[in-house]
Image (cartoon, rainbow, N blue to C red):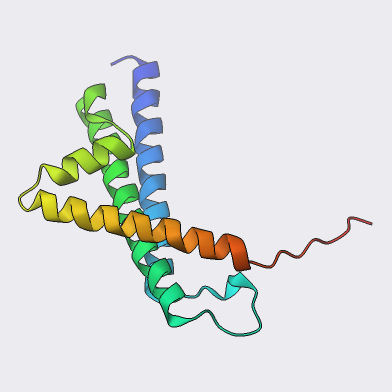
Length: 131
């Protein structure tokens, strides 16, 4: 194997591991449900926390699957095994019970979208002057 190819494999593995790290961070955010960064004077209502939890959990699964697809493609030297969100969801759908898994992921990602709308509406940004 040429040095460039070995470097490319290592880079893809690093990207895949990075995606696993992102998946872990998203999963922890879902587990902890600490959405105090919305900036309100009172904690976020329960429904907002559940929207965030479900959404971040779904994102964690998608990032983990995408990371695995990239690592798998790198290790087998088969670029057709890599993919993004669409490929990750296709792989999930092809598993036993995949239609149900895919429906749950779709619902979870939709809930993340709803959470993002709530977050966009209520997040308080603090802008500090550089002077």
